[in-house]
Length: 52
Image 1 (cartoon, rainbow, N blue to C red):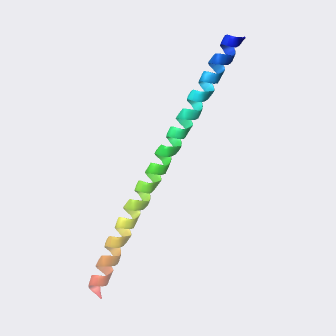
Image 2 (image 1 turned 180 degrees about the vertical axis):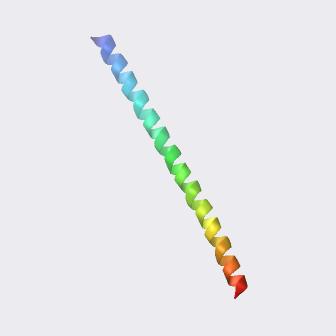
């Protein structure tokens, strides 16, 4: 049974590591999305201010 426990523990560690990496990737994608939206909003505000 010890071998199965070691394999299970290794698999759990691998799954946890992958979950953390995916979480970091999702956060990075969200940051990029918000930055893109902020740039868009800034350009729109600048154009609107120029029209006044």
